[in-house]
Image 1 (spheres, rainbow, N blue to C red):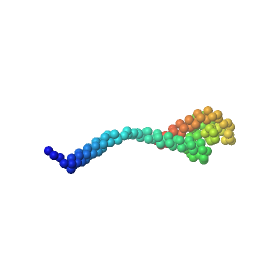
Image 2: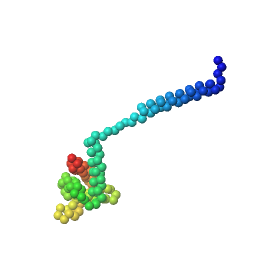
Image 3: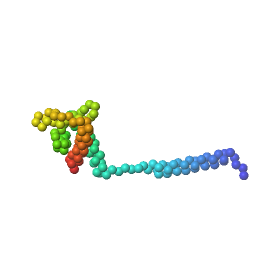
Image 4: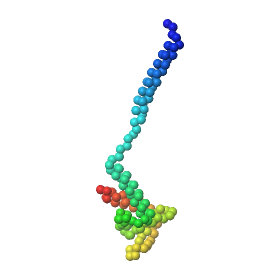
Length: 139
C-alpha cells in the first residue's frame, strides 16, 4: 500500500487535534479538583467577637487620644476606676503610648502619674473592660 504525503499529513493533523482536545479536557478536570480551596466559615459568635475587638480597639484609641469623651467612654473609664479603687484619667505619653493618672478626689486635678509598668497593666485591663462593656451593650 502506497501512502502519499497528503494522507500522512491529514492523519497527523487529525491525531494532533484529538490530542489537544483530550489534553484540554484533562486540564479542565485537573483544574476543577485542584482549584477547590479551603473554606473558612465563622460562627455568629466569632463574627460578633471580631466586631467587638474592632470597636474596642477604636474606643481605646479614642480614649487615649484625649478627645472629648462620650457617655460610653466615661462609663468605661468609670468601671476601670472602680476596679482600680481610685479615680483615673488617661493621657497620651509621647514615647510610651498611654499614661494613666490618678485624679484628686476633691478638685479633679492630677494627684499622681502612674509608672509605665502600671500604665501598661492598666492599658491591658482597659481593653478587657472595654470589650466586656461593648459585649454587654450589644446583647
